Amino acid sequence: MTDTKRNQKTQCLIVSYSYSGNTHRIARGIQELTGGDRYEIYPWQPYPMAFPELLNQVKKEVEHGYHPSLLPGAPSPVSYQVIFAGSPNWCGTIAPPLASWLYKNDLSGKILLPFYSHCGGVEADFRKDIAKLCPKADVREPLQTIGDGGGQLKELIGRWLRENKIRERQY
Image 1 (cartoon, rainbow, N blue to C red):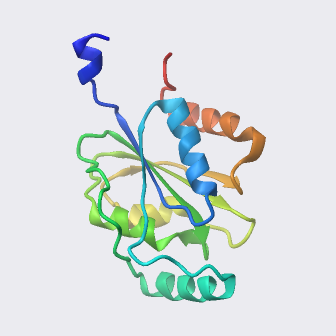
Image 2 (cartoon, one colour; image 1 turned 180 degrees about the vertical axis):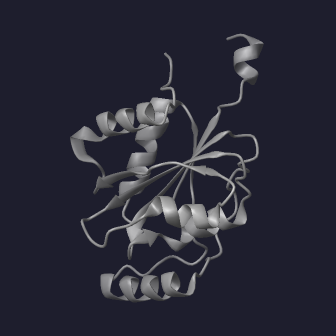
């Protein structure tokens, strides 16, 4: 490997929050196709395991625009031009942990590509919701999948990348 290749910084960062693992699987698929750096975010206080308690807490957090504290360690987005941001669809919007990460980072001038998993529940407008948190970013149309995208995940991601003029990894 040459020094140039060794010192080359990946141009995209993939950040995701996942409750069940579906969104992280999508993030791994994006990483596989782009070669980007991937980071999983976690709230300082984990969410309840029982669905009724989870739903009650999430509804309150979304309604109040709550941004939970996150575990430390997330990389700075400063050196990346393209940011992929993933979350489950919770109550028709992004999960509070991802909202917290977006809110706390200046993504001005960055290309922001949202992605989310859902189970067919409340319709979401991730592009609009993320644009509110990151008004100076170029927020693109999101990739949405049911569950973890199943056997079609790689094709869905590839089509989405091409639609957004994002080059796939060159092997």
